[in-house]
Length: 230
Image (cartoon, rainbow, N blue to C red):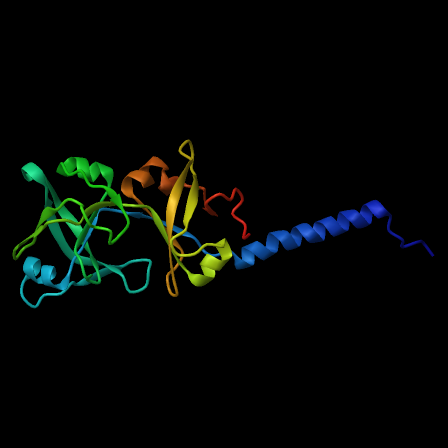
């Protein structure tokens, strides 16, 4: 009877194949589904400001649902008026309403309006410039609230555990695109119990990395070079 004994080299080769297969399969089965979205210029409004702009008793009309559950692009739009009457004529309102009105713009938008808006995280409005919002029923003068939204990532607690991060930490996003690959650092983690994994960058950032042509996107814990859980 022919011998079925395997030599040491063959055994090692089989073991390496099994280990590599396990290493490849496990992360794919547990890796969160990452979405990267361009957040175009938009406005958040309070209930009072909705009525001032669109009429007494009016509320926002849900239009296109956004990636995060419960959020939507409203049917309503406003005109933004900056210094020296520079305008952005049709800017989408996002819902639901908030406790403070806020305008989020890209850098090129601020140049068009003539407003020196700082990079801020959502809700951090103290000391920011204002503008005038114009709707079909009336106007609202914001004393503050115009910002360039800082890049950030929404995630739930399970995603946070996978990346070994927590709310308030920072990550980096690697975008691989033809001739336009970029790495964005200082991506703020906004973790809660329900959010889907989604990075928000603005229009200028999306154009700079040719996001529409991206072949690979990777989210990394800041300081980590491989993206694995540590």
